[in-house]
Length: 181
Image (tube, rainbow, N blue to C red; front, top):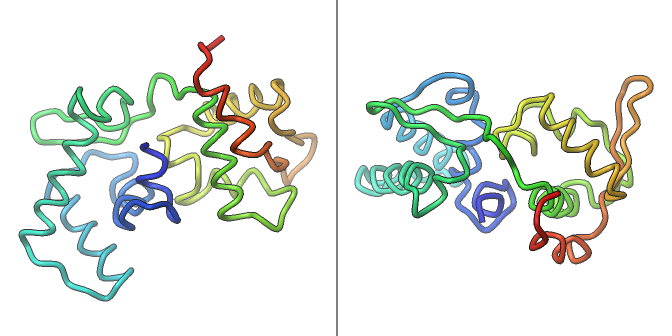
């Protein structure tokens, strides 16, 4: 659910993606007002519309609540709140097969004509790994696990390091419901 909400080409609102890939929020603490500012910037850049204060406030409340409440997406561990200050966190664990499914979907949406892409395309800027709050080391470790499982290949002998197209989403769906090993 999280991936589809925040994927740049997913069914979620564009500001949701912008919040997870915004340099203004990454690697620092931020406030609800910072989230409101990012929602305004993203919406204006995406559609040219200026949202009403009530709409922006409500969107910020929904976004922050979605990632801090234990009965919502809080258990993912992506957003931490401490006395009105928030920070995007690297989660303890991202389920491997959920990441594989999301990567396959992301590839179809962004690299459909490619069989190989640079690892940097998945890592740098507001790229795929950021949507899961993964640091570079953690992301590469998970890609190596996916390579060992035959989902993709990684070529890291010499730069530019590359990743091959992962198997199709439909092939990965059954693995989503298997216990982690």
